[in-house]
Image (cartoon, rainbow, N blue to C red; front, side, top):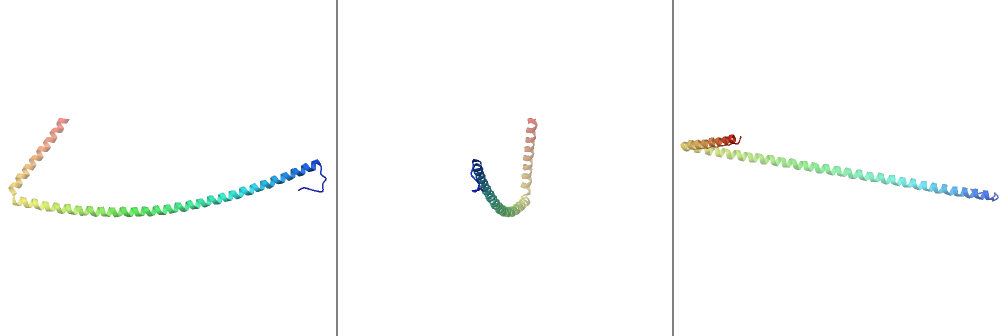
Amino acid sequence: MFNDKLPLTPDTTASAKLHDVADRIDAAGQKAADSASTLIEKTRDGAASALDTLADKVETARTESGSALHRAADQIESLQARGMAACRDTSARVREQACVKRDQAVGYIRSEPGKSVLLAAVAGAALVGLIGAMSSSRRDAV
């Protein structure tokens, strides 16, 4: 860099100082470039690590949500099966009660045929009267 054997003249001294300053600036620039490279590498490593962690968390969430969905589906199937069983049981009880009531009605008709015909006639007349009243109220409304 600096040559001690050259006579020091104002031009040589200034030139040597400029070279010295240039060398220092170059060294500082190299050091800054090295620091920037190190920082970029650390940032890249940190980003990669963060992405790996995020990917792991997403995979864990996907697995757990899949398990939760399977449990929910199993519970829904169980509820559906219990609901269908309850409907079958209720339907069987209603059918059984209807058969009992039908048998009671048939027994009453056989034991009291006169009363049965009279009750059927009264019920029929009431039904005809009700239908007539409803149809006349509709004609009046139009």
